[in-house]
Image 1: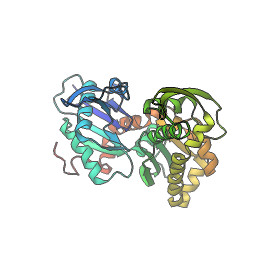
Image 2: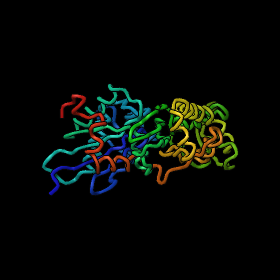
Image 3: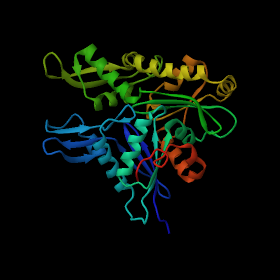
Image 4: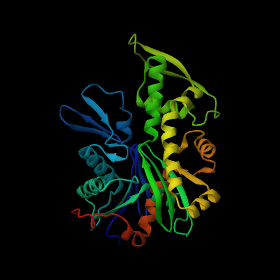
Length: 342
């Protein structure tokens, strides 16, 4: 008999993934909550709320409780987590669940405690935190326990987590608060500046995926985009090219590139040699931007490779931690060692 559920949570800015031991990934939903403001009434969570972004009347707002990898609205984050947890764990257990949550590298102790408290309030018996790059490396099937350096760059919705790992621990790493959301913002900003056209975040993301490229000599596509003309106030349609978006991506790309260079510059020489031999693995949804690995390889001079199923690397790594929690628990921040009631 199984007395308690064991759950892994990829608490992402853009999406939430939940893994239940013995069942696999049971939740993969946008991290969005829709609320009726006047009555403070919850209307929708996840995909339904995401479809409301930019389409709701004034009294209804679709919000993202996490920004740049941290909880921006604690009450909404708790409501969202509780909703997904109840959806994931439908049967009743004798004991409350044990939970492992992925957090960005560089998260402060205050931010870590906030996550632990939020998870404790939704009914966790015991909670552990693991840095996203370490989980992503496990999910990408890198052998992080060997006496050799492995490097991973996990590009999420709100952050890009960069780490060199050896003997199971992060030797050098950083979290750059730039991710897929900043690329979407860059698209919307470019269209507004160049064409006086206002578009929403859903349209900007769709445009990025359809024709965007990180590499100036990447694909060469063109598509139409609709929005509201800032001068006339009327709906208008324009054409945008891949080349235009590649130029718009320069700022967020440069920030991620600087983060990677900084970690490499601080990496011990022996481990740096290992990385030259092995290359660097890219994971996360942001890594799916066309030409990303080619751009980084060209700029840094070492090979970058896209992980298999990059969107699921972090949650698969969380699953690996749950399977061997005894091996990891002493090295992970937890509700017990940070004094969080459960």
